[in-house]
Length: 453
Image (cartoon, rainbow, N blue to C red; front, side):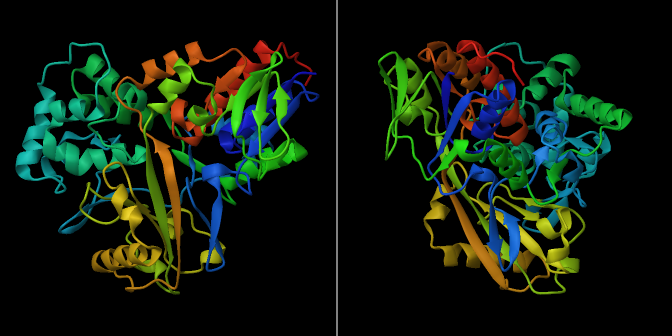
């Protein structure tokens, strides 16, 4: 029976291994994880007796792959939707709610563009120029920022739209590839001649389709998904076992670890692919994908503070305006009996161009976040329980030309080596699940794995 080694026990690696086992339960799949636990960025952390998300807190339900996997695993009945929606923008005058009925932060109602106080009157007038701007004529990839600035101007881009869109990638709007991040905007411009008209059409379609919740998560948290995958794989998952090198040896691939090497017919890299691949064009291209460091400051406030939070799920911050890039009100968005009536918040820190804040000690990060929150919201100057989670070099940056780079990487990989995960195929959980399933099929075809499930 062929053997497959999967490097990394995050959602990508575990999904690849699970799909291969589903195709043939006798398939010898070994998952190597350097950390002492599975889950990758989906893990949770305990703060004051509460179990809180250290990374992603949900997945995009309108991309079906993560939802379908949960149902396949028998945990579909545990999925819950947010109890609060609606986001705010941080401004010097306080929090300003984003208009209802937006698509990618772009209002679907032109009246909101005229009236919304998050942007100055001059900024709103410039944004309305989108309605008569000419379409882009070139077909090649460009930065997200170049499209937004051309259509809406600098103020609306920097203050209103970039905090939402670039924030999802912890990126710089002027560096991110629009084709790899938000290709829908290009389609709107091509079809409607305007991003505002495109947003209007998207909002109308969503209201007619009764699309359901945008986000879902298992009741116990997103780590429930990776925990269930790991449980299905059993002792095939080797935690605390780091892959150190991959090389061709005697017609197979040999994966070196801190103990005995493992020989395999195929190797799937979901973690540190550039460092593990043999030297060659694919390794060179992978090494050129830049990563930025991020972190989260988790705050549990005293009893009675939950009701002090405004209606909504949190706020985003324009670049450089505050020590955090965004803040989620977990106790409003995902209420849990264990929270009681306490305000439970998570502040995101660090992004492209703002990584230096992560050099500060934990105490300074906590103090900076709590002071700014107390000035913005009726919260105490200190939280009862706190934690800081750091994710060094964790968020890949999809630079202009990213999709072409991915094609070059996959076309130049040595036979029997496969790469998937956040660095290539999408930063969201749903996209990682989709790409992992496609990778598992490619592996199975390459090693001629029969369907025996």
